[in-house]
Length: 301
Ligand SMILES: Nc1ncnc2c1ncn2[C@@H]1O[C@H](COP(=O)(O)OP(=O)(O)OP(=O)(O)O)[C@@H](O)[C@H]1O
Image (spheres, protein in one colour):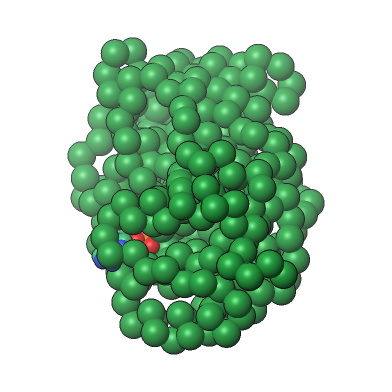
């Protein structure tokens, strides 16, 4: 291994913030040159620097927000398809890590060093990459308002299930979605409670890990319906079932979301941005990612 080709980007403030020294020591022992972030935006700069230095491996010790920043930096340096990424989960929700079989920080360090490498799809919302999901509507808005503790206990999607949504006012999204579905072009127009676009996660049929190597995004549109009704349905199904009334499910290579002149708030792996219109697409098998043993290359649908 070339000296210096393994870099780690560590956010000491992720999660409960008590991990920095031990994680730095353990990653250093595995040959990673560790840099710490000092504030918002640093992980992106460090990701860009690692990309510009053509680092062969980048481990991210942080939560989903830090992973997304690093991803943006690597994409900015045009290095996404030439790096092997790994995640040491020290954040709050750690959705990506949990989805790819990385269960805790110790195992994450082992995976960063020796874990199996899979080449996974990367989603793009406009020019910005995402690995887990890009969502708009109720869960995105709810997670904006949510406490870290709730997020830690349930994860973002759980806001659909827990009734936390009732704490916020939500008028629905008036949107048109045009998608290139696996069975051909597809259009949906109307008032939606939420739009869920998953790369690593699927949102229907028990949820869980999506096929991350199939060049398809898992799209679910939940038609606007009375809140209590939605909660009852969702709890009844534990998750949205594909055949639930008012839920449209399609797998697509790309889609555009038009808010008819109104800004729509999207959460891209937990990072928020408003767009009146957004093009979302997947780049098939673009990023090498180290995964844990429970990662499924070919999950059932
Ligand atoms: N040294 C630092 N001090 C304070 N904040 C920082 C520092 N470095 C980065 N940040 C900010 O910390 C925030 C939280 O990061 P991160 O997403 O890793 O953790 P989390 O929110 O606990 O986990 P998750 O996203 O998995 O729920 C990010 O918005 C990032 O910009």
